[in-house]
Image (cartoon, rainbow, N blue to C red; front, side, top):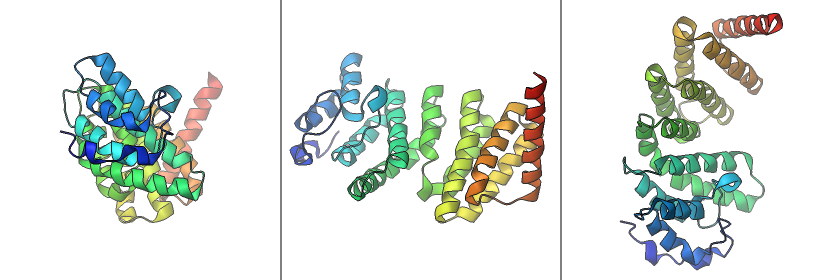
Length: 253
């Protein structure tokens, strides 16, 4: 396990890994401690590697080289802290998506993304994890899988059909729309096929979804429309009607 860990010159990445005061030369010990028998040691190691609190999902020059070992641990379906790990990955995607600062930072982001996307089959599997927190974080990761967009959307749609947790169902609805919005903006491969998944989601919600789910779909769809989102007369009419109904209920209350 952790093949090649000691072959990496970790100090070449500088001493700026901002976790809890750790130094980059300590990364190998932290990687190994992710599977320490003591759960407190495991959680401390994860905090050192991925951050904690507002720093969870932090990125550093060493991050692309840490990710393969995080994914290696996450493969274990019985790993107690798998929710912490997958949520840390979800936070990485959020930071990459919203915190672009410089071209040098962009280069780091691309390296991190290339490392993270190798875990795509694992993220798909975690969608059916017994722990709802793991499933929720897996959804939050999959919505950034632009390189795997058509399959990610089909997988999310399939999970939506069997998911019983209300929060996760809402996350899937908004996440699917976000992923299609992103692929439409950047015209990534398969973006037209991706639209069909949204039509399928809408058809299901129209006939079987709760009103709250219909409203969530309508609001998300309306927010993304300004990006040149899917143009479909039937969906547009449904969105307008649903939002009017929701507004009327709110006014009455």
